[in-house]
Amino acid sequence: MSEKQIKKVGIIIVTFNPDVDLLVQNLRELMFNELTEIIVINNGAGLELPLDMGEKTHVLNLNDNLGIALAQNKGIELAHELQVDFITFFDQDSKIPEGFLETLVEDWGKLELMYDKLGMVVPAYYDRNLKRVESFAIFQGGHFNRGFIPENDWQMPVSMPISSG
Image (cartoon, rainbow, N blue to C red):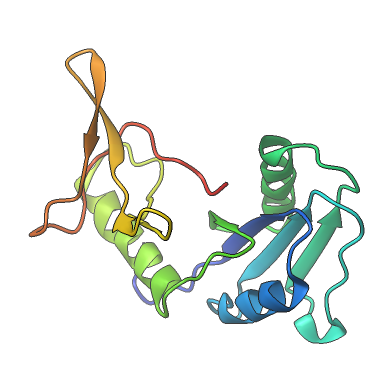
């Protein structure tokens, strides 16, 4: 991946009875670049966003809580139709640091040079309830262990990343 090449990122957010004001604030902050497509899959009654959210924000109302897996799959289908290069998932109340998506896309480029089979890049995330950066599952010796990214490193292979939800 050329560092100068702009990548199209599809952001999928599954909602259920969200605080609309907070959601709109978060959506505005998530615009990565002019190619960003924000896909909101609403697992509840009709969700209406302000008209000024623009043509790059898409809302699919499922009108019932059909579960996060089905909702995320609907988001992936729409992202493929929109021909995005990358897909990322967030919760309806996720707070994303400035530059987060840029860093994730840059890291993909670095990791793709390091690994023959790169399937996804997942960030370490801060759990607000536990007040810590959460661990990852690593499959070793026939069983899963919990692992944290070493302090002096920026990446590590993991066996079972989680999606938002």
